[in-house]
Amino acid sequence: MKTSSMRWFAVSVLVAESIALSSCGQSSSHTARILYRPLGICKGYETPAGLVTAGPNKGFAVFSIESVDNANNDTSFTLAPERLFVTQSPPILAAGSANRRFVYPDPRFAQAMGFTKIPETTVPAGEKLDINGVIIIPLDISNPNGGAEANQFSFELAYDTGAGEKGDQQNVNDGIVFTMTKPPDAKWSLVENCNALPFN
Image: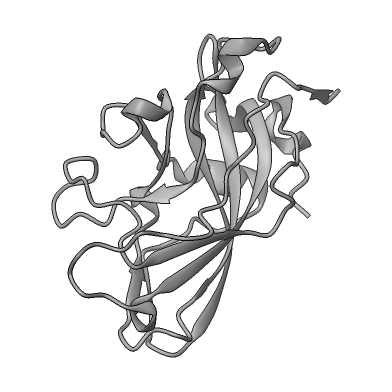
């Protein structure tokens, strides 16, 4: 299927190079690093039950979660994939939870792409664990031709570290650093079928 290189998503995935930890006295010895790679945006994927689509003016942002590096942490870290999200809102509102877009938990996506769904995984203190799985996050893509509006969104992979249900807490990236293994200025591509994305 033809891949159309879309420059409309001029805002590339930002890397959280430095994370402001909460005022709980945490230090760098309590930090886990999540290494990931953005793969692109697709409109749908085939399952044995039929086609799954993101819907009109929507798409699935696809990320490869490569590893969790807990080598410099003196406590274990549990990765719960459903707490990963991006925020689609103007920067002034990005601190709120109303525009958080969380991982779509459909296990058929990973199966259709030839991956195993990422389970909740605990990485012991002092260790690094390869994950090598994929996640998808539904997004609004109502501005496919670019323009000034395309720059108004914050699009950064983040983690809800609140103690309650996902989205109910304001804690974000507490004790976590995200590292993108793809150049930060890389442009997103948009494809109709998720199978056309560069998974390798």
